Image 1 (spheres, helix red, strand yellow):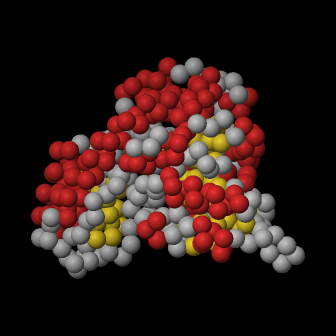
Image 2: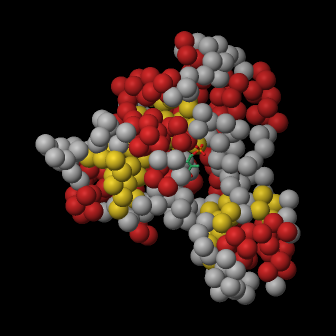
Length: 339
Ligand SMILES: *Cc1c(COP(=O)(O)O)cnc(C)c1O
C-alpha cells in the first residue's frame, strides 16, 4: 500500500517510540512535566516567539487562537479556502462565537492589503468590529503553496494599521520555510500567533504547537483547559514531538518526491499536474473524464491512496513513509489503473 492521503498517516519511528517510553513525565496541568516544558521551550525557539503551548491538534491550536484574539460577536477575516473556514466544523462560530468574513485571496493565498481594508469593519453601534485576520502557510487547499514573506508582511501591516491582530495557521510552516529558503522565525516575525503541526511532515504521532507572546500563551493555556485539552503526563507524546523538531531538514525529501510524483503523473495522458511547491500534489483528472471520486477509487484498486479534493482534483501528499521508489511505483500503477 502506498499511502499518499496525507502527511499525517506516518508511523512513528523506533526512536520516537523509545523516547515516549523513556520520557520523564509529570502532571502538565501543574506544569510539572519536564518533557512538555522542554518541548514548549524548543518549539518557541523554532519559531522565534516568547512562548509556546503544546496542543493535541492543529485544529485546537487554531481555535484557541481565534478565541484568545477575538471578543464574542467580532468578525474573523480570512481567505475563502482557509482551513479554519473550510475544515474545522465552523469552530470559530461554535467556540469563539465570531462571525466569519471570507475574501477570495486567489493564487496569492493571502488577502491583499486592499482586500483587508475593504473588508475591515469598525466596531460601532451597528457593526461588530474585525477581531482577527487569519492567514495560512503553506496553503493546503490551494495546493501546498508556500506564501512568501513579503505577502504575509503586507497583509499583517494592513491589519495592524487597523488595530487587528493576525494569526498564522502554519500547520506546514516548516514546509513553507524550506520551499522559500526563509528561516521559520523570519517567516512569522510579523504575526501575533502561529500554529504548526508536529504530526504532519515532521512525523510525530500526536500534537501541534501554538506560539506567540507570553501573555497570549498564558491566556491560550486557559482556553486549552476550557476545551478539554489540559493533558496530564503528556511528556509521553511530547517526547516524540521533540524528535519531530529535528526533522525539519528532511522535509526537502518530501518536496523532491512530490516534484517527481507530479512530473510522472503529468506525463500520463488525461492527467494534468502542476509542479508542486512543497509536499502536496494536486492532480486534475478532467481531461481523462474521471471525476476525482472515481480517480481515487481506481488508484485505491491498485493500492495507491489519495484524497478527492474537488470535483476533478485529487490530492496526494508525500510523507516520510514514502520513498522515491514508492513514488515511481505509484506512477506506474496509476498509469495502468486509468488506461
Ligand atoms: C492539518 C491542518 C490543520 C489541522 O491540524 P489537525 O492536527 O489535523 O487538527 C490546520 N490547518 C491546516 C492548513 C492543515 O493542513
